[in-house]
Structure formats: structure tokens, C-alpha cells
Image (cartoon, rainbow, N blue to C red; front, side, top):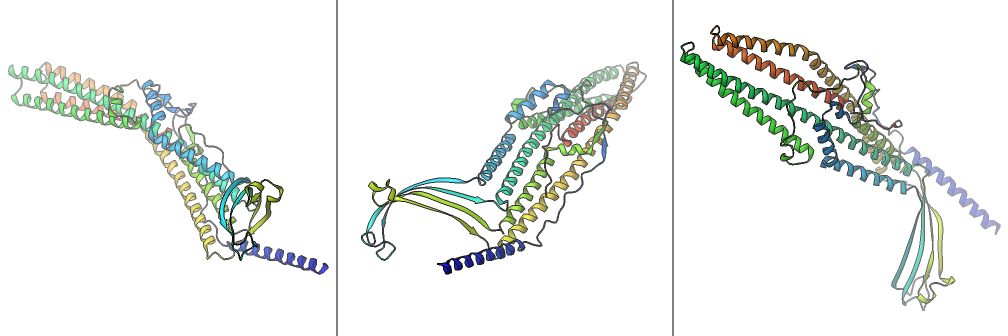
Length: 482
């Protein structure tokens, strides 16, 4: 008896030593495999933008334009656009992955019932009359299973799923921002296209009046037939300009309808010419570069880095021993009448230990792939930050240029209009010829068109700033990626 106990203790010690040795081998097997990339330092420069004391708008930044039509369009698009519904479905799928990963940390309990018709071998475990006979085996069990997560494999998998869900949510918010900015940009392009169309129609009216005046002067011998022909050509050109302007308006209506997820008729009557009374918000004088962290696409990229880092932990845990606890309790009988008796009880209980010894390099390859995915995620994040800084700087530059140029452009339009009126009056009095009127009119049209384009660029660049700095999005606080 003592000798048997001694042998058992010796075997237990040998098993322990072997397990420790195998554990050491497992830990050392992924040495030398590490990610190569690091997250770059965040930019610390500030960007100058607008007016001191101005405040950033909230997430509904488009309402700062105080345009009820725009508010209605954006609200409709955010409620119905298929692109957003796709993004929201991806969020729900990622949340389901989180629930599945979370379940791996919990024990499982299953019930199994069966009635199996079976012939037992005459040379097997069971003697006659069972051996060599055919019986129906009735069985019902409760099966318990629990995996000890000593190496954080399941917890890292859960962290990866949580980060992936965060990235999916940030992607949905980014899609929302892109859609809202696309609606706002297209809407104001439409308004300024309507302004250009109105200018073209005014030009046609003016040139028709000038043609009539030139015909009258020619009949009185004050102009030659050449002037009439030139005036007719200008009328025809004005009609061509109207066709081009109206084509641009219709294309923008179609684009706006597509952003709404609707047909072209949905925007048939949308929009009015911009004019000079358009309300634009002011920006803070200094924009801290750390506001770039409020961009949803940056938040999504950072969450992907965190997910990739967690998956490295999962890959490393594959090198470690896996310890499971399994138990089963139930009833089994070849006679349904005795199934519920005490003698039909069966149970099993015990831990199971598994450790990879030779996998042909599969585990190292998986870890290298996880490290590479982490490197990709990090460099994509770094590039996204660089692009974000450039986009914000470009948008602010365009906004400042357009804003500073508007006042002198307005003065130029007024001066050109006065020059045209004076030239036209002199023409009516016979002091100027038709060519001088045509030159003055073309200059006025060019200045008015340039003014409309400049105002459109100011609004477009303001929308680009809102988009480049996240449009009021606030990213959740995240831990270090690796």
C-alpha cells in the first residue's frame, strides 16, 4: 500500500515537472515576434480659423446656417438613407459578436436526451445477454463545461470584439457626418447654381432690350447693321448660357435626391437662389489640432488598432496550456421503465489539460499575421491623422481666403455695375457705341458670377471645416492600444 502511494506521488511529481517544462517551451516559442509599428505622436500645432469668442456648433452643426429647408433635408436623409442603415446593421452585427465573445467567459450547461437503437458487440465491454444483443439505450444528461481563462485568451477576444464594435459605431457616425455634409454641400451648390441661373436670365433680358435699342438706333442711322448682328449673337449666347445653367441646376437636384435616397422628383422644387443674405456661422479664432481626435473616422481607426492589439493577445494565448473543467450528470438505461431509478445514474467530472507541442509553425504564423494586422492598423491610423490635419488646414485656408475676398469682390461688383449703367446711359444718348456697352456688360456678368462662386466657396469650405473636425462628434475615451 505504501509502495503504491509512493509510486503515485512520484508520477504526480513527474507530471508536474513535465507540465512546467512544456509550459516553458510554450512561452518561449513566440519569442522574437513583435509588432513593428508605433502610433505617432498627436500634432500639437493649432490652426487659426475665424473670429475670437465664436463657439463650435453641436452635432447638428448644419442648423447654424439657419435654413429650415436644409434642416428638413438633412433630417430626412439621416432617417432614410440606405447607406446609414447599412452602417447601423454593421453596428448590430458587431454588438452580436461582443455578446458571443462575452459568453465564452461564462460556464455552459446543456441538456441532452436520446433514445438510440444499438447492437452491443459480443466481444466488447458488456457480457451476455447485453453483449451480442440489440437494445434501445435511453439516456438523459446535464453537461457542464467551463474553460479557465488563465492566459486571458477569451478576455482578449472580448476586448477585440468590443473595440471592433466601437469601430463599427464610429464608422456609422462617420457615415452620418459624410451624409450630412454631402447634403449641406450639395444643397448650397444648388442654391448658388440657381443664383447663376438667375444671372443668366437677367443677362438675356438685358441683351434683348439692348438688341431692341440697337435696332432702333440702326433704323435712325446711328448704328451699323454689324452692331445689330452682334447684338443678336449676344442674345443667342445668353440663351445658351441659360441652358447650361439650368442643366447644372437639374444635375444638382438629381444628386441631392440620391443623397436623400429618393427619386429625382423629390427635389424638383427644392432650393432658392442664394442672394446676399445667406447666414454663415463664425469659427473660433484658434482651432486646437487635438480637435481632430473628435473625428469619427479617427476614432474608428484607433479602435481598430485596439482590436488588433487584443487579437495579438489571443494569438499568444494559443501557445499556452488550455484547461477545461467538464462534468456530466444523468440517467442511462436499456429499459425505459428503469430509467428513473437510482441504479440508472451516471456522472463524470474532471479537468482536461491540452498544450500544443508541435503545430508545424501554425501558431507562430498566426501570431505573425496578428502582428502584421496590428502594424497595418497602426499605420492606417497614423495616415488618417496626417490626412485629417491636411484636410482641416486646407479647409481653413479656403475659408479664410474666401471670407477675406468677399468684401473687395462686393465693391468690385458695385463699381462694375455703376460703370455699366454709365456706359449704357451714354449709349442711349449717342455718346458711346455698342461695343463699349457690350464690354461693360460682360465685365458686370463676370464680376457677378465670380462673386457667386466666391460666396459658394466660402460656404463649401465652412462645411469642409465642420467635416474635417468631426462635426461635433465626441469620441469615447479609449485606453492605450498596445
